[in-house]
Amino acid sequence: MLHLSSLRNENGYLAIIGALVILTLLTVISISASRVANTEISMARNDVIYRRNFYLAEGAALEAADHLTQYGNLRENLQPWMEMATGELNMDSLREYWDNTAANGDTVVPEPSLVDSNHTLFIIGHEGIAKGFSINMDQATVHSIAVYGRCTWNGTSVIKMGYQAAY
Picture 1 (tube, helix red, strand yellow):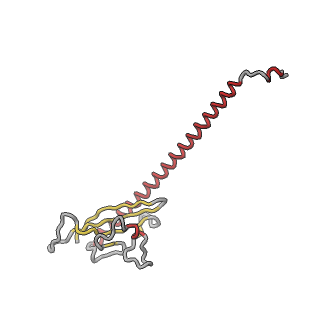
Picture 2 (cartoon, helix red, strand yellow):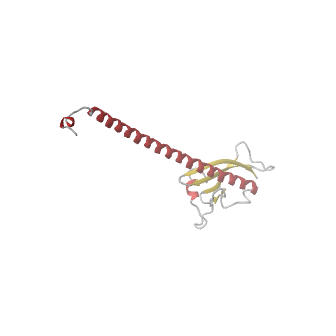
Picture 3 (tube, rainbow, N blue to C red):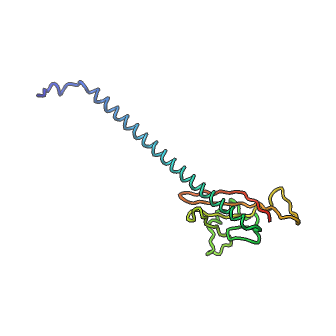
């Protein structure tokens, strides 16, 4: 049987307040830990996307460089993905080139890479005669070429590699 005097007794109120304070602190700590975990997961996902795009863009650029080894004289074996007008293709003008299509009548059209034809493209641009080489009528001239690979898959990565060809 419960006595009225025990209901009016204030013994134990500190324990209840202490328990509420501890529960509040645990709630704040768990919410903070959850937010930190979500941030870490987001950073890890972004890192995976960046690395995937970087390596796919690099693969596209390496594929373009591999194709260049097959063509020999690039002036005679010009491909649609080659901008051979010296200095026309650079990091500033590159954005315009990625959207070029044959249907629009563009003369230089990026090539889809076999690495991932849905997300990667490559293109090259002639940068002029390689430094340290002079024009000599008796020998092939060494040309400096910029090879670009691009991957667009939940973000964009562009790789530029140097290449030299003698023709």
